[in-house]
Image (cartoon, rainbow, N blue to C red):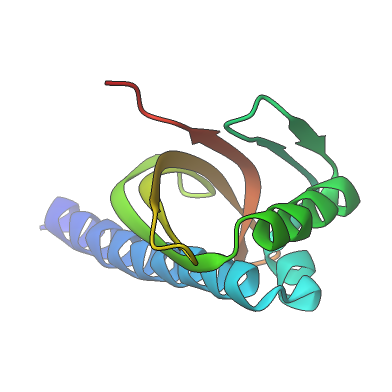
Length: 137
């Protein structure tokens, strides 16, 4: 009887953690759409790093936020991030694979894959790393 009780708690915790991660990725998308630097700084770790599809590395929160704003200004449009899979490495670290689509102002579509490494810091999920990839045919 003890084992099912522990398993049920882990499942509930995992579901809550998944919901929190969905919210985190949604907040990231909102921050990018609205160019909200305060929100970005709240949901990114200070040592965040990002590798974008052009091959540019952005290391540290200041460089990452500046690059995100520059990219959003250069590629204006409606952004949609759809989570495909969340894989927990432990209760404090997860890998989140997503489809990242940008409907550009000229109606062209830009389709990417993004992988987020998310970590729990002080009880909150934050983005520690982002990898953007352009799929090949």
